[in-house]
Image 1: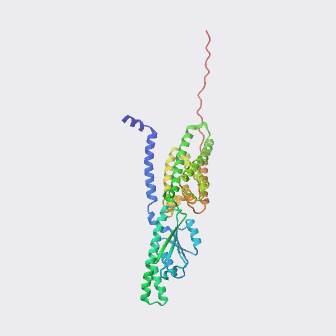
Image 2: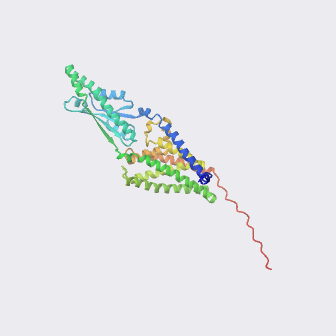
Image 3: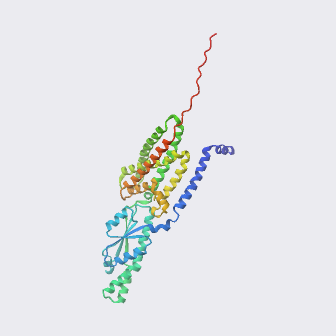
Length: 390
């Protein structure tokens, strides 16, 4: 057995395999520990829109929420505009104070309602955070704003002060919450599909690119560098179309949801894979086999910065900017739009096209700077000397 181990360890692929396993550990540890560091400290970057339609207590309540909530709180004039911003992920939650809020508070036997909208076409962490915020806001309004505001209103109605205070305490438990979800996601399995598609697509593109690079080295001087580059491009297109067809089909066959249907998902996944393939192969064209190291770094960075697991608003400025230059960010956003609902997927598609075009241009430049290897010179051929018959 010792001899067998020594024989394996003498082979370069064995050493490369061990080194790759170690590099995966090191790279993922560094990128993930730095990328997710301080995420909970950045929740103040999340945005909430308040729509106040109540002319009575709504104003003071909205002002109190705007000043006390540890988020970026804005006031919107209408519910339609606020929900449009929510759908486009400009805000993470909409709070509405209905026009009859004060009236319901002052009517015996009735309850006033605060309405909340949360867009589920986001990382799951958004829904978790905002659901908790909705409960906290309702509790705060119950305990403070409603009691104080109702007492003021009742006093202005010439009710005795003691009676006003007693009635206000009763009113303080009359506020309920109504949390509604837009673009609902059916189950955790569907929630994780955007991340799964990015992971499977980029890892598959990395491995395909590595094998194409090995094939290119084996072909050697049999083909010119431009013919090999063109063949790679054609194989990328064919591979992207077939792979995305299989992947999209299986996602929907296994119960995945798709608001915009199969064809839109297939087309967008084809674009994602094309972008991933050309992007990952750029490192191999530039650095050869060592390009896989940069692909491992790119994979780890994209899983962190794409917004598939943690909202990009909570990341550090460095990783937020880095994500804007990497294709996975646009793949995640577009997949969420197509699978769960949201704005048009044209914006993310344009982002993928830009990354793909830049990768193709870089690949052309690298290929142009390289020279074809000269074919091996054939040795001189000596004619056999005739032998004289005796």
